[in-house]
Length: 139
Image 1 (tube, one colour):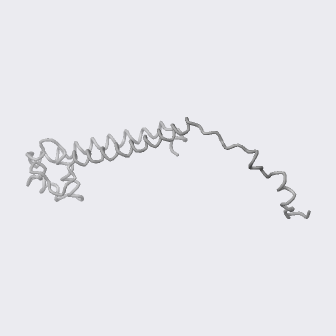
Image 2: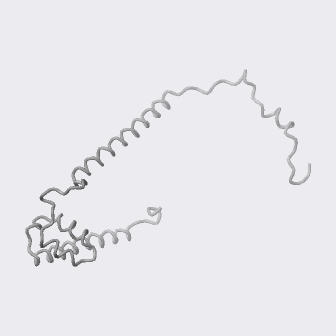
Image 3: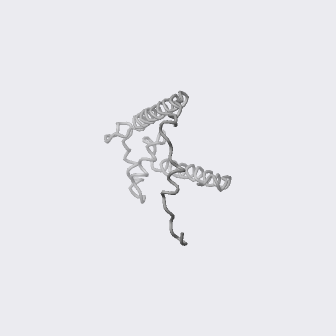
């Protein structure tokens, strides 16, 4: 046999052939069936719970097109947010703050500064947590 060439497959065929009459079928394992059924049930249950969670979250946040009456911005809110770079984000953020619909222009500025500081604090805390991660946790 030369270098880089395969030998004849007939020589190896007789030693690797299996006689179907002497081989027995693989044993059936009831535990394996149970585990497969259990895993399939868990996957279906997870899918249903995710669908319910998404539906409840959408219902709670009110992702519908029309804003309810208590979610409409006040004139002061529209006036203050119209001077920002992202007026829609400004209005949405202020609407989430309790009492912002009845606040004056000055109060809205204070509310927006406090909300900005709160969001910045959360982002700073989240970024500090990156320091505590191990290299393996990132992948």
